[in-house]
Image: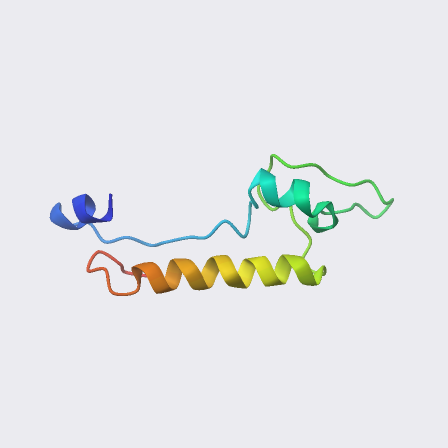
Length: 80
């Protein structure tokens, strides 16, 4: 897809799955799901369905971000 966009003269801004973790990740690590002040755990399915405090979330976020950056860093369509 990046090649096609580049061919059409379109620049791309890449994003990661950190704001909406994949379902397999929240199933494997439910501690990354956000909690309300009363302790209610929010479920998968909405953006920003994560809590930044669990170290496991930060570890996966860093890994996902690094892999995307390493894979696409030299693609000519990449703007940011």
